Length: 324
Image 1: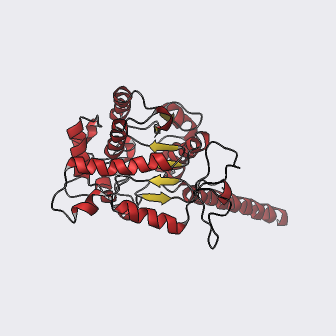
Image 2: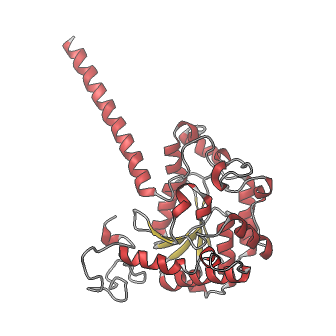
Image 3: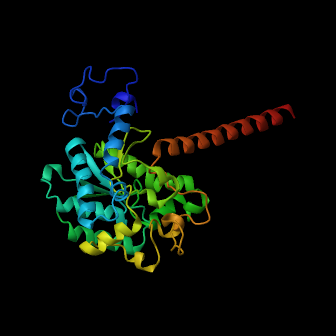
């Protein structure tokens, strides 16, 4: 994706106001109704500094206590800013606790239909039955919210997935599994829905690579990612869900905290990081969705190198046979 076709791009050493109005492209793009968003690196740092002041823990460091109402109000400010500022905004969710809190807060804001934030759910075909049951509960609880479900391309069932890619692909080639089940469907959703920005459920307290995330990020493909509850703890999220009667995954009552596919998710022990049950015993902590460009580029490069090695091997064998 070229800088000009990306939702966000940086213009080092150039006056970003030249040719643009109020931080947006002039409207000459192919999607005239969805202007490109121009955010320079200094502007991104400025926005994160400003939004840091709205984060609950940042405030609680100065005060011994902060009410749940204040916490909710602070996040509502961030969400209102997103809705007002970012065109073609969606929420990506696997219906974890944080995403459910965001969804519930948005529903309480009484947003007009044209500005409502649609959901994108990636059905890998390997979710727990409890997760799929929760999807139905969410549809019932929030009937005004549009839910876009994306599955591996051309595949509708787990059985079909195994027929096409082999049994237990997540064990035989986890890079390919991540691409087929998660990254490609995500990229297809962003492309077909013309997504400029997404709300995510990532939080710093989840640990790993998420430990130092900002409220606003821009990934390698130019997608704006907003982590509105970045500074909330698991307990704060859980308290909100209980206090507001938000439907949640029943696996949380059985020792799970971060829930993904059934084959790569386990309950965690007391004192472990929230995501310790994901890919337990493996070095990986992310599936590639939150770094799709480099993940796929790495996969493609590996496949190309294997192909080149095979061509070279066949050429050498052919030369040896000819010489003989």
